[in-house]
Length: 237
Image 1: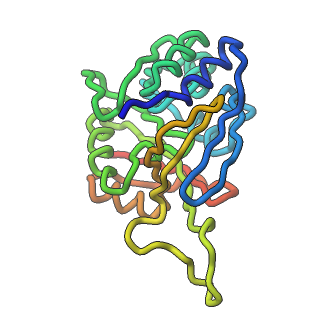
Image 2: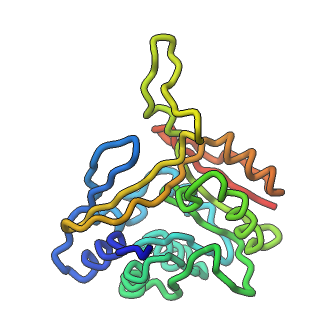
């Protein structure tokens, strides 16, 4: 199944002034919501505190996974003068990154990304656990990230515990289907009247991420909690 790459199309439309419109996002547990494309082009001052903290912690050689419009990469490259490799599966997003001045941007899937380089900082931001897709994929992805990490390197990743989105019963329990992890969602994007095929997107509560990290030989620490059930974590060897 080929992706239409509507997310990348929206990014490139905005970058090239090609009548950009807002994206419409929808998940299995939430109704349609507008996502402003210009938000993906925000500068440091417009970023949430978790992202700002992650950028301030960045060091050495950086890999920005799922870089989108490249806003994090640009800050690290231009303000912190770090060597950044920005990767995304979206060809159009990478095209936009290059137009914005990201000096090393590549169309890559992290699981198929081959390089002799080791990275001091690996970024997965804007719900970085999302690209794992499903809980069953987490170990495979963490092992891949681990293989790219320099000896004293760090993986900086954010996510949210979305338990708050589920209805409570009279006793305060949550109505959650018992057949899978509650953070496994299907995501749908609509742009300019076109609809992308639904794709899996994973939100992980911190304890689940920490357990997965330990299982895969990584240490995990909670760096910062946001205002809305979100958090930034650091994984190290």
